[in-house]
Image (tube, rainbow, N blue to C red; front, side):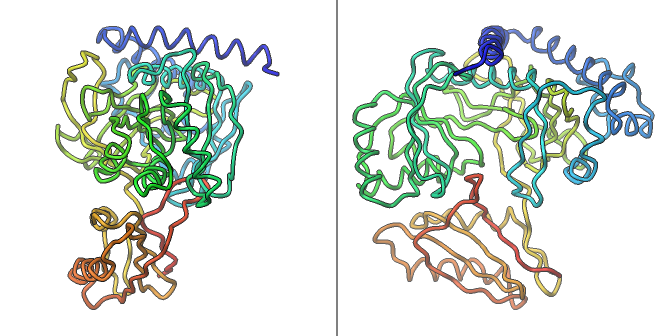
Length: 435
């Protein structure tokens, strides 16, 4: 039974979504909404949150110094280390009803996040906004969601309402069983006009099952991926199998729904009424076309405010204006996590982003680099059906040897699957080495 408070929260989210959908075409509304929220949030943090009062005083900045997004550079940065180490200092003097969650911990120790009703309501409105942009109506749509990992097993169909009133069905692509194949095939046939929404690795896994003929395919009305950066190869696989353009969403536990793609381009619209996004190079604004560090300010969360947060991701800044006529600022591309580099025993560093390029092998479906406790590497890969594994091994060797040199030993291991973490994310680099 849904409580009255949840019904009211949902209705408010629906109302906010209508405002946001209309406002995204009005640059003046975007600027005024963002700046008004920023001023309110900064003042609230200074008056109610111990961490920010101390940080602002140390930086010699007061709420009166922050008038608009142009003044954001005056505020100090926030890192995961500070968020983990001083958790209680981020909570305000008085805190209302909120939900506690944990980040996936993809860069180390998970972070606890407190989300109040205000932030959840605005986040739901942002989801409704981009779903509508790709043809998913607020009421009556059918959604199919792949589950995140094998441990989730199965889940019964259910009516979901917070992001729109929909009937949601679930499949588990990590169950390599005939029972799963038959269920998924029948579901796709019965719900041929459904939208496919889920975490990127799970949708890719499902696409390969359709590609291999284990599951009968269908053409979804929309495909929305999220949770992990979408590579060009993964996009090609999904769109090739389902014959539907992919809409990728950039979000994080700490700051909610950040940016999303419409159907007019592959660039990302930033939810500027919900968050302020900076792309920085050496802590200065990156130029259009440059790769920079993503820094986010959540404009709606008061239970645990997040200001100028170095989330640990990289993205490409842009001045691009979308043909869809939305006036939201954009990102050219989400490069991915500024993740875990490999440090060799001799001190040489193998950069994470450099290693990422090894994933782009046509006959390789999954790829993972494991650094063992002695510093050596094991390169795991899942080959496509009928792949030339000898050729793959030679190719991996030829790509790794120039980078590693004689500083480290590596072995190549062919496996049938690489299981995701509990969050559903697949780590490219796993290091068990302690220098």
